[in-house]
Image (tube, rainbow, N blue to C red):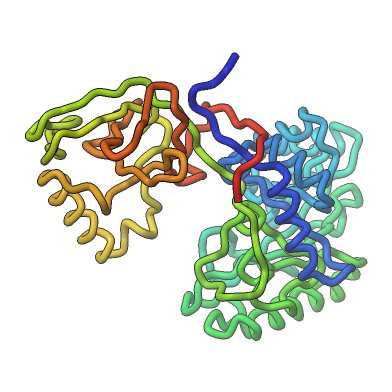
Length: 382
């Protein structure tokens, strides 16, 4: 069945982006392709298959459900589940040969019980909080390693962390988030020392997400966890590092109606936009329910953007929408006018020859784009 609204995913670009990132790594460093949040909006299975074919060593997901979905889709690569799972779900994680994240020693016996019931070993990575403050426990890394030592079927195969923003607090001696390089060295030393004391063999130590992968080769350690870069976007704190990433995502839809409104006509709920001239208005079946018009939380906290949004709304009431949200109609950028509805929006297409059935590309936040919209593998003009 044809789709009037769909997300175009350029799988060739996804694969090329992974290969581009790979060129920044030493041969021994493994690359984990992070496919959480529905593959950053690109589709979980579609993204995972693409990255596996392009040479990813690991896949990373947030939840057990995502990990199980990958296994049921036939993906055989190692998969790390970033969030600890509830005790009742550990057996499912082990059954599907997923690697769990452990943050406390109390989780170890639960994994041990699951291994006995299933008759198979379990792999876990220990997460160490180094100042981000969103995941961790009161147990130290040596505490957790000691708890795992009696259970031969619970394999600690990795230790990792995710650094907080510069200036965030520190929970470990030697970790200084104002000096990322020092933090990496201290974390690696901490992990290696604890593993050595516990008599553990070679274990994968990792701390670098997309930003550190580009900014600090010393942070690569045994593996990097890359998400944003693979999807064609540069992290905010990365300058010009000499790589070119390809665009991978477009939300496409089609015009379903076109009408001409006289000057002084309101458009959308609340009459926030009023035409100042004779205006051709095109309706597109995409709205709030599809994820259109959502702004990242980090931007909502920026007072300058709040002021800009107020100014945009004020301008819209006066019939000016040049600075508001927009869509692409062919090679022409056209404004979205009026308040975005639940399942539709309106475009000012006065200066175009737009007609019913024409394709439009809408500007939307990828991870907020509804998972119910089909993801279609196709090419995107670069």
